[in-house]
Length: 157
Image 1: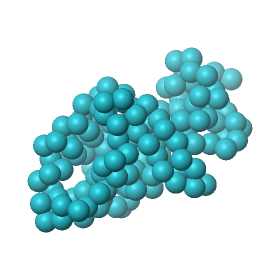
Image 2 (image 1 turned 180 degrees about the horizontal axis):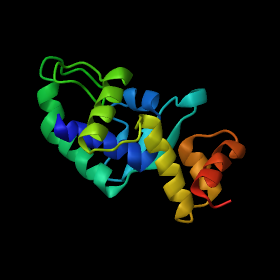
Image 3 (image 1 turned 45 degrees about the vertical axis):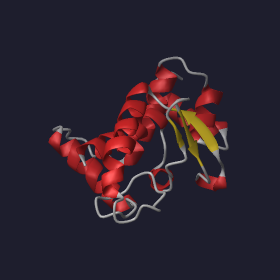
Image 4 (image 1 turned 90 degrees about the vertical axis):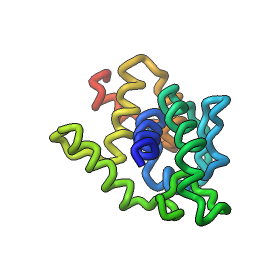
């Protein structure tokens, strides 16, 4: 479970994906060779493709090849990317608990959620000079004004 959980955390940090979007990922959505993740029917039923960081690729590859096959022994037809050891898709509540547990074990005092990773993802991109339109596209925002909120948070506006 440690490798699965690390893959989840790396995916959140690397892509800025929403919790709901992560729970709907299938094994076909991760292109580890190309380093991309396809997000189908995100918020507003929009599809998008986002790049994966090298750590996310590394832990996803390890999870998909070594851990997931053991977790899906009872249900080989399961296509969800992230599954429990009981061959069931991971739900939002389980992932939220996992994030809180990891934050607590890391002695992080701040309340950490999946959305915290999303904010961090956007702020890091903007702080490091990414084009605001590219960030908008990766985040799946319709409006540039929604993305500009992260400019203020990153202190670059």
